[in-house]
Length: 168
Image 1 (cartoon, one colour):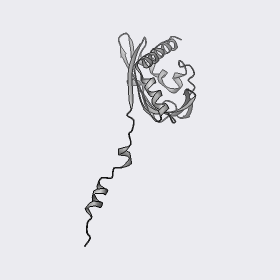
Image 2 (tube, helix red, strand yellow):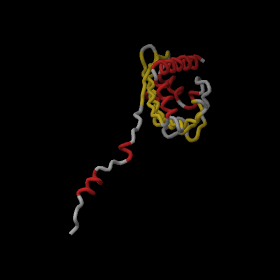
Image 3 (cartoon, one colour):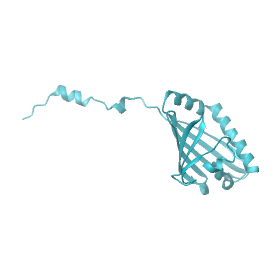
Image 4 (cartoon, helix red, strand yellow):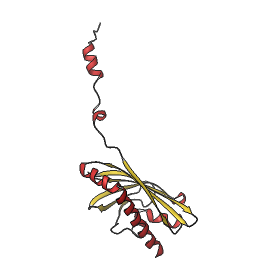
């Protein structure tokens, strides 16, 4: 007959897995929108890796697989020269939706969602970034990038540059 040691049992029962004790950062998110004087059918191709070349200064994606379809992978060097690897998680221009996952090694990782809705006077574009910091430097980046003033300025820049590209 095996005797049970209550002290040992108590010690085993109170062991907490390492993952449960480590403080993990919560994803941070911001959403904003802007108006374009066009239709979503004309705007959506500009929110792809190749399409963004038409309006985003310094945007030179290196296509690693595919193009715009789900699962396509590309790399950029847009954030302080650090390589950012992207994967298309969804691209459905017919319903006005593009979604990407992105990783900036040793900095941050997250999602970018673009939704376009046709309106009577044009299109409303909504952009959501959801980011998780992977380091202290990444935390500083995420806090700055998603802060209201920076995020609004970025979306205003998008609106201006996309409008210029559409006018060409």
